[in-house]
Length: 539
Image (cartoon, rainbow, N blue to C red):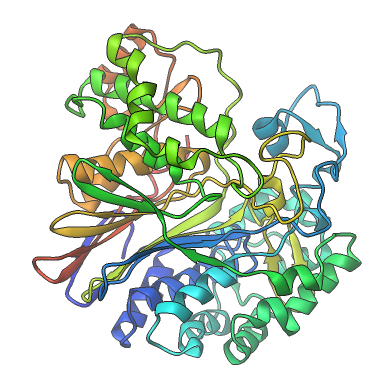
């Protein structure tokens, strides 16, 4: 569907950006595919069109899948994991620079020598993206695997404009040129391309031809998996053939809560939507004011702070840390956490703020639904722009940097460890209401949580359509202020929040394009809604 619009269709809908990826998904539906086929094919097209945001070598693909025939919901977790040779002191910490600062300074308040956990071979674990797309198709798809891959092969054969990729290359040019195979892939003529220049993605068409014939698992235990691991080993990384061959996506029951009569389901940890569920539990403890009032936005800001403090205190890979998942998702915990806010509703929590990380460029979201009641919410990510910036020679595969989502400092819950899954910020979910099932998700780093939870609240409590929820004003605040709020909330609201004592930062937009897809149960039809890029622009 086109960004910023609403679409109703009898067969099925796809909400994705870039628009050509949504068209790929729509053509899959027209060819007889279901919502799962469409989600996998549209996601693969995203990998071709926006490799700065995601790629077939991207580090994470997570999804929530609703089976229309059975009503069962599944969590799909294809997050990267740390290689077997990883350890918590594998990155050298160096003094913080006096000026500037990248991901480590903003996210972990430290500096890693050569940013080795962000760019280069030591930033790479087994990439989950191909496995996520593959397992969704394998478990639930109707079409053949070559039919899922075919649209992406055609994109590369026909060529397409660089579009936003050109700006991403320009912004990271100095880093890209440190990696000759990546520079050759992104800039075949040796110069930064323009948005209108046509790109065929050198070697990628051959890679896709191989994937179509050999199957997605070849990416891990076959010829492609060997090429990936061998190149990383030759480049000084620790990823091995065994790490690749051992990688498996996890398909399990999701995390789920009830929220004001609706059931809300998300992928399991270490994917990030558990925080969205906690936000909803906290919100349910209140008689929520009208959404256009300062009191509403004040309440939401204070709830976000509580949820973020729990996230930063407790969340990590549950197989390596004692994460109180049941307690964090319980109504009793929400009631206890909100006691002071209920007693002193006008109080502004003035905890001293910590630096807020900039939202990464490397994430997209796809939502699909079909007339059989299948619904998919899938978030896909490279990490930061172009991930590790490492390209496997002769393949066109740019690898994500999942290792940078683990804390490079020893002794923390999310510190590096062998086989450990990094904590990420994805926030995809499916909302089940008596009359409809809704897939919700968007890119935007830390800001995903607040926007996804608010969209869910508006769909459930105000009976808004996906399009209305996607285009609504937005807010984000982490464990401490400033409070980011979109200017569309209104100047009166912004000034009132400031008069209450909030440190307010008005922005033109927060996070990325929100994509929703719905199955309307009574009508037996589907509907999709999306925000415009401007509504979700990072400020």
